[in-house]
Length: 125
Image 1 (tube, one colour):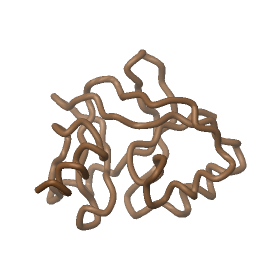
Image 2: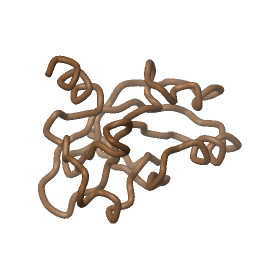
Image 3: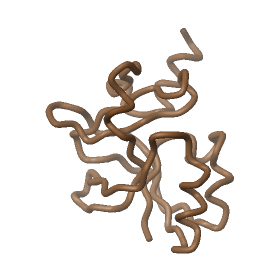
Image 4: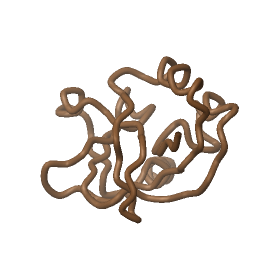
């Protein structure tokens, strides 16, 4: 299956080893209409489908053997789940999404365009 990841599962990030056995395909973005939040004291992002507004969020696309999907999500932080995500080319793939009930008190980082941009900003701040 195809899996879009937008945070700590990406190459060079803290949980990337959880994708061992998966094949990196390309860097891409979602279609506009998603919001990104700093979860867990800023240790991982949570992406939700926006009811209004939002932006395209950067991430990576992987080919994941079906037997690994459950293993990957067992190791994900709280409030993240597997859901359908629309990419910038209009295709719909599985992706890592966040439960909306978990984000109201979290800092929104949507306008950085992605997890890596936000982390780079925080490093420079």
